[in-house]
Image (cartoon, rainbow, N blue to C red; front, side):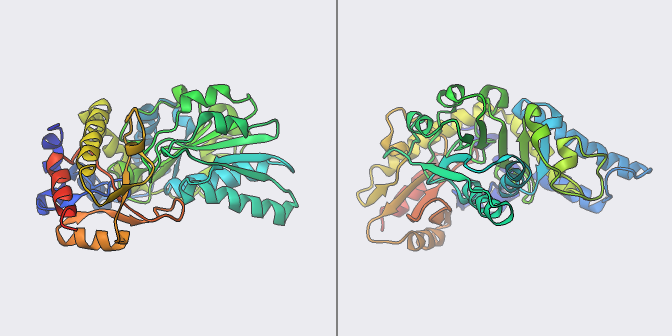
Length: 390
């Protein structure tokens, strides 16, 4: 479990704050110096991309093109299936507008998770309002719940799917409970006419992602959760469904209206963000995504083992309640007779940084800890020794 020793020194945050325990990577990761330097280099040598007949513009255009190819290779798809967005929220809103407004009819149904992240749920409820207001179309949104373990049950999801269902919206790894949805037991059982949208924000950068193996039609994630800068995200759109998209954004840079890029990406993109994502993927691949996944799983198990020794702790659904404990995501809990905000503020006084609140998923507040490969046993031991004093 010494993988963090290989690269931790490459993060300015940890170099400058060696005593801090950062346990909020599910919200955003710290940034390696390679990413910071590359973004700094672009900002010091900035240009727009495309149609600039000078070397600097050509260089930056190549970097953006390389970034699209690199993302495509990272999730095993074609580069023409990649759309750059400002983040996961933007990805799912683009999808709801450009696909949902164009394709959903009266009585059509969307199935989604009751306790999934707001950025994944709310675009579809907003779409429902828009369709009713502007087209007098009523669509149905039906929610599935989770088991006490925090897992969505594939059987219960499939029971809600019928001939009127046009879309099933799923989360790969839950941002609050850390549980992994059994995509492999859901997607193959769906009727051919049902499309699948997957939120991979908490799985990207933690475990290998292969959209072909997953069998999904749409997938979205944010770069800032995988060592890139904020303001950059990705929407994957399977080639076979791209013709069903409307042109959602008009403006400069469009070469036509046939490709998914031309339909959704008009205007100057976040060039610095794309460059940061490009370097972040290199950074992850240099370490090895399989090594990161292995480290994450081992550290999660150790974290749960240590937290379970505390007498004043109550775990939310998640790894604590499952039998297999094959979970890679965050762990959420409460401390008896204390609000999550109080716990977070006290931990901050000991230089332990955690996320508190409802985490945009349901109303129940909790302390959430989320690690990455730069965390280690010592971080968890400092957390637990501090919580013992509460």
